[in-house]
Amino acid sequence: MERIIGKQLSSVEFVQDYVQLRFDGVCLTAYVWPTVVCSSTTLALSHAGYRDALCGNIGRIVKAAHVEEGKRIQIEFEGGTMMMISLRPQDYQGPEAAELQDGDNRVVF
Image 1 (cartoon, rainbow, N blue to C red):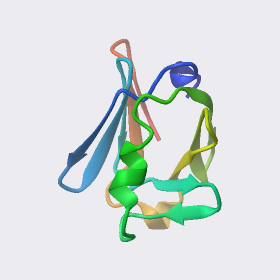
Image 2 (spheres, rainbow, N blue to C red):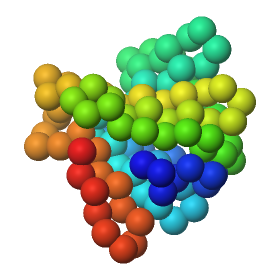
Image 3 (cartoon, rainbow, N blue to C red):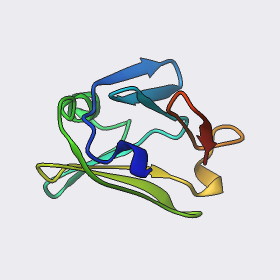
Image 4 (cartoon, rainbow, N blue to C red):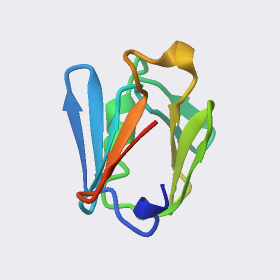
């Protein structure tokens, strides 16, 4: 996940049952929908304003990103917003929760 630190979220692409987050050339495909934490509010896919909150991070720089094995991927943006992708097997919609591609190789979570 260190590959996205210091990069900006350049686009959010909604593709039927998953979302792609692009960070200046690095693509994180989330098959488990991320939650977005803004201030003291946590938004999930089913909440009003979720897509706006997710897209509201476009242009923001990633200040920290890490993986807690078996728990979650956590991405923190400048300004305090966070995105979290669950890595708990019960939350998976398919064989993996997420995939990170940077053009050189692919990492699957």
